[in-house]
Image 1 (cartoon, rainbow, N blue to C red):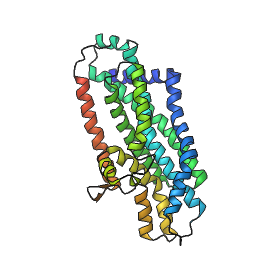
Image 2 (cartoon, rainbow, N blue to C red):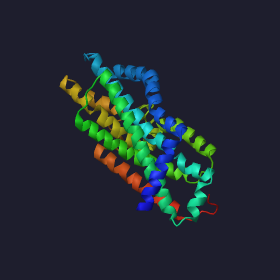
Image 3 (cartoon, rainbow, N blue to C red):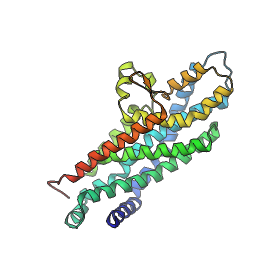
Image 4 (cartoon, one colour):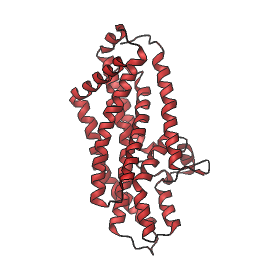
Length: 299
């Protein structure tokens, strides 16, 4: 345990010492919220307004609060995963600069070394994404606040689970990489594509039936939906208080991917959490099995 803690502290210090890695990780959520607020806010707003029945009189605050909550959930869904790929660069750097050669001759088991990378990535990513959550909450506060303390607690839990998912996924992907160029290429691909796969950039309900069915098998779909459900719970409650018909509220929730369907079954938030935890455990076993196999050319 002492060895593992020493490795975690060592990796965390390297992360803070590398100003480029630290800055890129911290700036990612800020860039995302600026881009989302600039380019996606109007798209989301127009889509939401066009879905409302004409007989409903909806306040600007409720509309803006709905859009802001949707944007914040989408941003966090992407950031929690993509940031882990940035933070996990330490694993690849150690291979590239030869630091792994020192570990290879030290009396430290190989899985312990990789668990050190894993937990340091979790802690550093948690720091970055909790900062992103604070920024998102500030943005929502200016647009339309409908959250309570319970919602925020659930959002923190969602973030922790998504970071665990992102960390184990990035650890598996980064494991065979040996150069920073390879890692940069992987990071670029993930940053560009993950937002579409998880339904952050565009609700999955807007995709074709075939794509919707295929994406219902991906854990990322339910991670994003968890965030949306907890971020928008107060908004839906306010709609009901304003006299919105139940079918209208349900229709809005469906359009925002709050009620994902798997094999004709509407997945609840509890089931979403179980799916995400199950995915973390399965991928975690895969990662441990990978690290247990001796490497032919270490370093």
